[in-house]
Length: 382
Image (tube, rainbow, N blue to C red; front, side, top):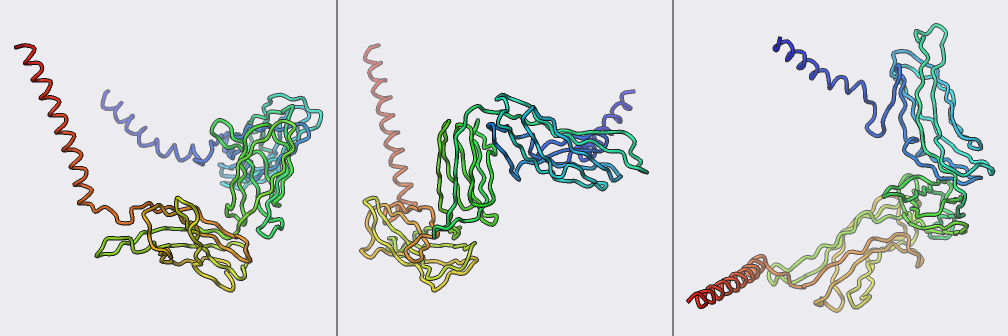
């Protein structure tokens, strides 16, 4: 009957949200599951490009096993790779309680004699029988990724130094640019990285104690030996705001209000000062000390400063940035901010009058043109 079919469809519609909860685990990556066993992670997203002799480890590349069943399970992890390619999983055997999950790190190594080419590599987890367990069906989940073994590469040696010239212990992430994506290519947790990379374009991201302090791009060619040394600043200017303030009576520019917030994420900095560097379109104008302290403590320091040029305001564009200095060395640097003249702002009423005048001019010109062509047409017909 029609009414019965409608009732069935309505019940199925109500069950869809419940089924979606049980079928999905994470929005970050797809999950495959079989018999209560699931696998997710980032391994499948990566197109590995390595050369013979390379090793690859990166905490951003992993799989995660999920036990969706109501009982504890034992799982053996296995890999499928071409000759000459070794993939190490840590851990390679796991015991998961009901509802539990386990992250598994992945490391790759390529023998010197590995044949260049394109390969599929696989991580597989297989259920192992347990004495006394209700699980009697053997089940497995797996995840695949693409590996390209290249015949040519360049050598990269990268170091991250502090402002004082010492090696700065940081996390280095190198990503390969490909098809508007950034794919993990190399990693180091020591502030220094030596690796071989396929020819192409790359991006470096550097983290100090979990905070990103540096981004830089580079390219490398086949057989090139590239040395890169970068300075990591650990005093961050998180906020730098330039606000023009006008006199209520004259409506002229009175001063620029500088708002700032500084974050020291490393260690106490002695004899620190914040310097406001001002320039115009014509070039550098002046440096002004915003503050000077015997020591800049770890943590946040915020404040404001009213800036007026020593020679008074001119009808030009002003450019501002702030640096943190100690013993003539720069430990922090803000992005440049610009204040665009005029010194006296145009009032809203004047703006509308200007716009109205332009529109009126357009109407008058258009009307005159229409009248001219009408008269010309009448003359021809007459």
